[in-house]
Length: 494
Image (cartoon, rainbow, N blue to C red; front, side, top):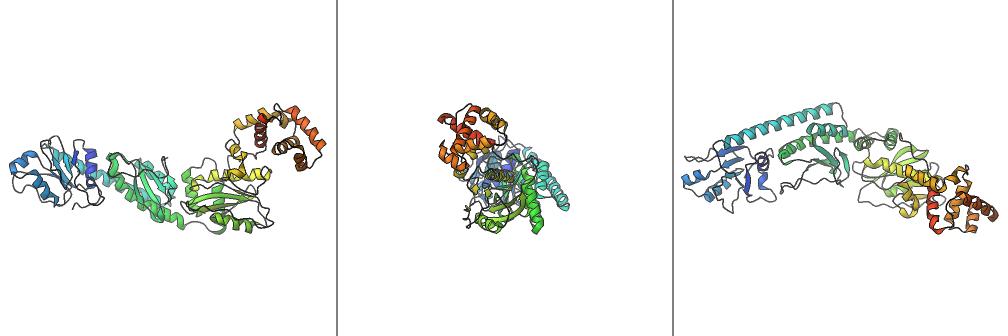
């Protein structure tokens, strides 16, 4: 049996030496690919006895057809004899006819020249030396970064730049914890051991059900990838363990989580992930952000939020109590019902696969809290992923704070807004549209006499290009009014 250390394989040698071609892959053992057999050295059969030098394991044996003819032993018999030895495979030239049932990988070259053995051995020596130097350099870099307590994100970024390979760490659910690349999916394709171009990433498991992946790995870099990932695994695991062990507690943790939620605009996903680990959030957990009015009902609100997952207090944002809710990706929690007399507004973001997405979660929760404060939503408990409760506001969110939405509002109700500094007419128009243009429900909701409503509607009509009773213009007006009452966009620095 061929001993395995994974340093250099037949597949690696074939990627470096284009003259080598696979003729017969040989019989695999279990799920192992025969081309993943280790290669330590190349030897050539001779006419004199012994035909081969003493075999120590992992040799690639070159069997020129002229040697086979002179020996008088059929090639099939020679290969069968070698199959019982710990060799990597056999190389034959174009004149040979390899047996169809060979148990060893059979490679072919146009001609086995007198220089081929030395060429291949020089290549193996050179490549092995490069691998050893790279491995030592990576170990030295990891030791230096670990000595100065580099955080996982910094460690991964520096190592990826040094190797010119992408590095990604994911959770068991596939959520990206750290990544120096932007793979098309959260789980990059794994190296396909049975296909030359089928896969481009190599993986190694980490503790805590995390996974380390590097790539894309070109065929001639596979040996480097296998060597490097073993060293990266140990260094990154130590960095992750250190980050977990130094997570803050108590008030310090609340401050750390608050800083995470209010990270400056432009913070990289890697920086956010590092902050999350430093603050003690479980790696790879699904996250939501919840904001609610602080006060005597805090205990009841926390009880209700806890049904969505684990609750992590994060101080205050915009004067509202803030929480991060974490859960497993497979968990789909539902918000518990409010206690009688509970009047707290509760704004909850949609779930996101990791802490890398917290800025968007915070933005969603702030949006909901803002429209609740402006009484654009009657519901006290609103989750961003509940389209039925958000209604038209969900569509407006995607244009929130954009010049396009400002232009749309100005074109439809700009004159009304300029002539109505206190917002009385705007509020009247919104309630009128929400009531379907019915005067009695509108006046009752506004608490005014129907004559007052009629007077205001005359003023409103004189300032609008579209009539509020025109069925073709009513929807556009309603969206414009809602857009004009949206909360201001959070500042870029918060």
